[in-house]
Length: 516
Image (cartoon, rainbow, N blue to C red; front, side, top):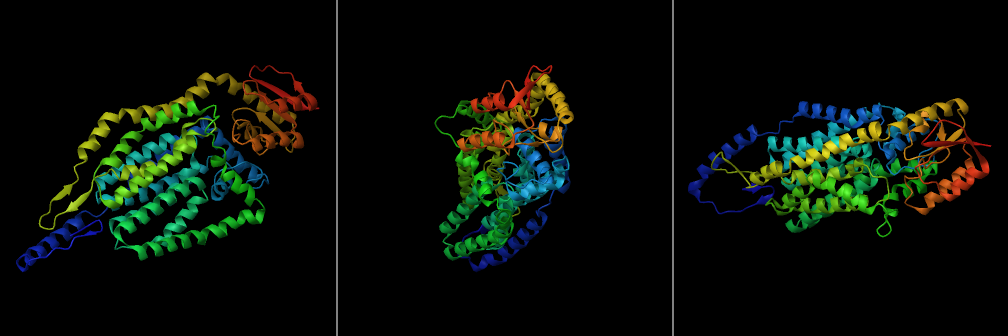
């Protein structure tokens, strides 16, 4: 009997052969009745709802994160003649900014999000079915995925969302191999898919690729598939190279290869383990959210529930990838926002898949046996189900409260200032907004005097701080808007005193300076 690649050899008496024939017929009939039924309509509805909640609503209500606003600015700047990784500071991949530039940073970008969520749902269902052969359980995984995607990506994290179909396609091929090792194919496509994902969200793709690589390595070593594992690695590497070098050559051609590498590696280079002033805030905010969405429950269920070898190996390495990704978030110095947890989603999904039911078919009957984990799954839903609801509600409601209750006067003032900038400057003039948000550039239709749009974003490296000051000195923006609640650096304060004059205005939250 073959169960997920485990082949058991038994001596079979001749008098049982007729019964085996009947059992085989029953098994084939059972498998035909249990073919995967892709819930495409459900995936379509979920994808539409998620993109409306996470992308369309935040865009029109001005609730997008600071980093996502910068990405939209990058698309707009590229259409004004700016070069990628030169006119703006970007930590995502080349294809991501290319797709943004097509839509010019408009709401049309939500179409790409919708297509990505649609494809991600399809491949996620296929992955779940490969592990469980259960439509209902695979559909439950879809529900968890879309709920988390809608809440975590509210107003940001769209680069990771775009990469999900490629990441899940690779997962689909790997899970099919873990379930049926004799079906050894598709590894060239794994490499090509991961390469496309890399040019959307590089660091998350690298961690995800390592999870799949070590899963295949451990699985093949345990099964003693040494030669098979070697040529699988070669096939994945070849597939990755087929797309990586042609696409990556663009940055070499434009002369921005060095900038691209340094900006992509910024989340690693800027990690601060010792003197991080917001470390406690990060631990409380992100730690409580991870617990709230059921992180501890999935951790327990992934590590301690009985499961086939392939699933157990996959869950272990996925957990390690999740912890590494979480480390990048906790020790970061970037502004706190719920969408920064979106890179955890691909790893959480694997943990969800490895907690599903496992089916085994008995040849002598048409009964289905399940691992005794259904009660644990039910206990998770009943005992921690309210925590994900609370966490998701907070992620959706808190931006509204911040924007339209706590800081409503600040945004009203800023809107008047943006109108004033348009009337007092030329379209070729550059400005700078010293604020904790960076939407004023597009609103006033003026380019930033620096590729670093805000003094609180991507300032984890001293060289970025120096670059911002030098940009303001060299490019001499026509107007500088200063939020009085954002700390003004001594160098910038000196620059304003020497080269700028304050403008009078009825503003409480901001000061406006114009070049002398």
